[in-house]
Image (cartoon, rainbow, N blue to C red; front, side, top):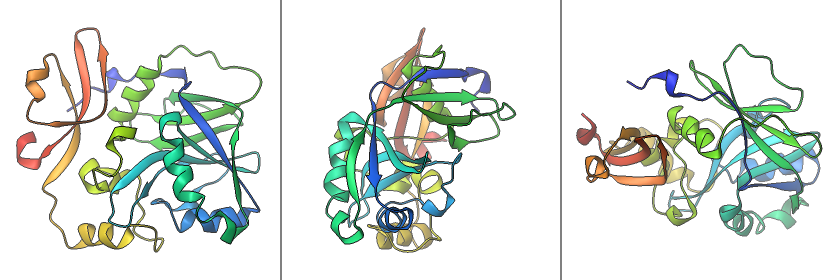
Length: 250
């Protein structure tokens, strides 16, 4: 069991994140996203964003990102290295919905709070558990006091069960292998790209592999696992999202 005291609370400037503005009327952008991404966009509101993914037709995850609705704008918050993956996929469908895409100039800040803390007016919750909540703040002007490193923010995400892929992991793993069927996939909203295979795994398949956060001091301790995303270090400890057989974790 992980110790919640390992969480680091505060704000981090997410300099490697970019925002993509999907420009069109509300319903057009909503319908575009709802038919492509794994999450249910009907749950997005002014202060509630969501973590989501794009998959290919075979159900393999292409990229991870956040969806928020900020000041009447649908924004996709994504790592700069993966933005072209998202744009290449979504741009195919823009003409059918009369929607355009463009990079939106802003500073993205990630915030980790205790659940009972008051939110800022322009803050968007993307993930919450009994331990904490994670949110994004989109600012063009003033800055938050950023007391955390981006690696602290990334570890907090792993701690709360959000195992993200990197650009290098594109098309290698299905959501169930990463735990994203719990955090990033809706099985109630209807069709999206890769939905048929992902739903078959949910209702008919038997999960053989999964991803968990492992804290270790020597890389030999995790030699049997596949590392998903980045490795983070704090003092003499390393933190990794590790993919392995379910038996290997017990």
